[in-house]
Image 1 (cartoon, rainbow, N blue to C red):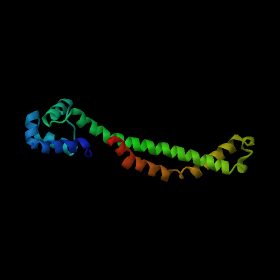
Image 2 (cartoon, one colour):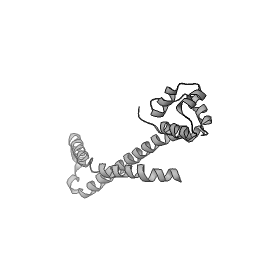
Image 3 (cartoon, one colour):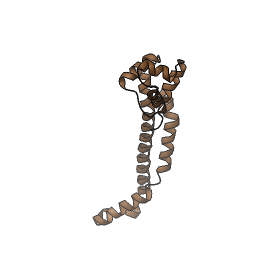
Image 4 (cartoon, one colour):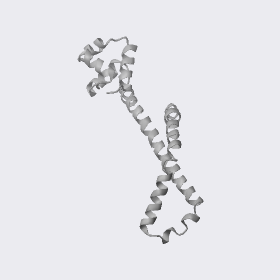
Length: 153
């Protein structure tokens, strides 16, 4: 299991309150191994223990829970922006290239369905990679710049 924001925050708030893992474990009625496991990101406290931790560490329960969701939400939103931008850039690329090559396919509707599908698939395959780089850049900009600024505001 990878380290979560919750695991970092538990340790940070515990140390800020000058408590050892043993102190917290004793006050919660759990083993110090449980506290260590939570701080290493190898497990999560129960709902009951989350409430006790928020009271013990003088931190609202929302802060402990919402911070965990914020990291996931940031990644999901940036991926979503990247995918949406990819679709838009790809569609514009197909549209522009279609307008540019109007004479090439002026009689496309008079062709057989098999030929039309072949032309569409070939054009799709030739243009699918064009939008990847700009979409990745947009996703990264969203992840590192736009979304953090929205969270501050």
